[in-house]
Image 1: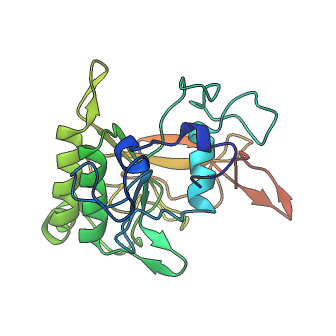
Image 2: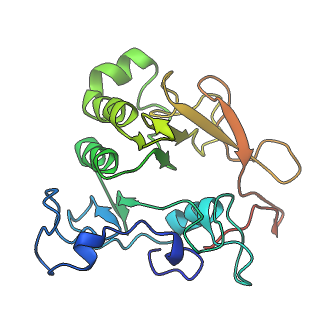
Amino acid sequence: MVEHPDLADNMWVNEAEKSGLTGVDDDGNGYIDDIHGWNCVRECGDVTADAHGTHVAGTISAVNNNGFAVCGIAGGTGNGDGVRLMAIQIFENDEGCYSHQIAEGIRYAADNGAAIANNSWGYSPTAYYNDGEYEQWDSVLKNAIEYFETNAGLDGTMTGGVAIFAAGNESYPEATYPGAYNKYVCVSAMASDYTAAYYTNYGRGVNVCAPGGDAYYGTTLCVSSTS
């Protein structure tokens, strides 16, 4: 992801770590060699996110009009006028993170300049059935997101951060948590014919429907990206 030719110019860069010494916490933020973000799986600055993460990142921030791949909705020209991507990796191969690890990544993002937390992941449809269960059993993650919403933001532009979650991909008639929680923005997927994507969750908990990938009978109908 961080070296993708359509994304590299829009990656967030921790200049102190980039120009500092390998194996040293050059900026004193408690994280070593976190040049483009943090890998929560291996607890290091080596971000290896690819595939789905790169696809989503491309939809958001692929550089525009460069003759390569696609154009992101906030990609700009690649000359500092597009969005900045900070990579918080919570999956690697078949391994994923626990809630407390994801919470650490969200706090990291808030403390290091992120303003919008895009979360294209979620729990299974039966993990939590209501807000009360989520609040009780996943308070570590909930508190971290509240921390992000309070402490993130951009000077002169945003006071506080915004947490956005996917509704889920199980064709379930309710959004999955964390996205279903009443204080988050939850997004379901729309196919290219303006109907619900066949896989998307829908109904209670969903706030917004936005373009997503879809496929019928072997023909791909999708919003292309930098996968």
